[in-house]
Image 1 (cartoon, rainbow, N blue to C red):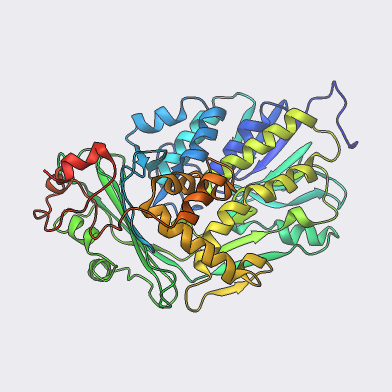
Image 2 (tube, helix red, strand yellow):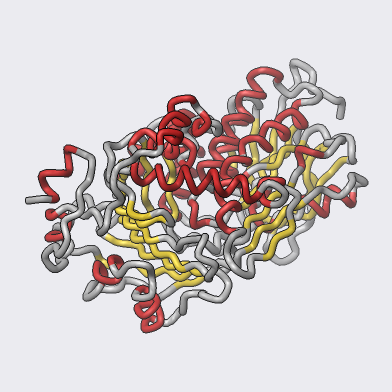
Length: 491
């Protein structure tokens, strides 16, 4: 195969992995090539159901506004389809009751949002929307044998059907996209082709997850997201909890704990762990509710980043994105949104250069910048937990860690207590704005001024939310700065 296809030749692409990252990549590729084939090892469900190849799917997942905007631009109508299927659009920070390391978050007027739903619903609706494009075909229950080509150019893949007796077959492609997730074999495959070893950073706080789904109280309506986070500065293992309203009138409660504080997987242990969080709010909210599932657990949570963008040589015809490029601790919820932003960058590169030589390496370097923000957000906290196992050359986590953390702690304190800094921090954490937003002059002026609203002393639930959730009457009446909430809280 030549370095670039002739103008009249039919073009094709292969995507490895039919999760959300793979289907968003396929959507982009279908705009630029004649045929896209997606391979996946699993039998894909025909609805919003759990599938074996996604071990974290039973736990809390969100689509931040930055990622949601990209998904909607690539697959118009997908967000409305999610909402029609029962997903919740949660306005941030107004519909969030969150205890952070720096205190309770004031419920300022919304500047960003998230879509809260089960991972199964997110994956299914994204896949269904992508497959409306006739150029995309999915081949299920197919194992990946290896790459075709050499260190200079990848020309396709070798695959094998999973059924007994299935013979390997070569599938040629002008572009191969690896979206196989955390288990990607690409690092080994490239070394076998003669490329130098790729740098891999790992920050592993030993986070374990336990999740249970409950039937929400009747008539509770649009309840806020509730999150209780550990203080990563405390020098003790972290314990976190999140209550996420999802489709079909359910509340998904996910507990997580770093090495030494892993949540139990029994119902009794789950309930007991809830009571050890920094506040009993979630425990009180689910007390007496009907559990709809057993407790599901997962330990696949390490932050892992492969620096393919730093290789001096990179083969034509190959792009890697999603968790195969950078996998983050799921507690921060950046996986799907980061994959969406990566797909957008692939689209922009193809718009500008087509399948011309140099495309793959240019894309890979751009994707390194895309994943840097969620990588920094996740690792800068995780590395501060006791017994965190780290192998990194990131100066923000090593040589300059103390300086970086002092700045982050100042921003964290202002984020929960100042509306302008809160809005700027949400731009970054939802991947909706530039990564340097917190360095802007208006933010720096507020931080330098040193004044912010008084910290809240209790969860900022409204009286209406208190009643709807069946909680006892408010014992304390925290103030909030949102005029749209204030009257209700103090009634």
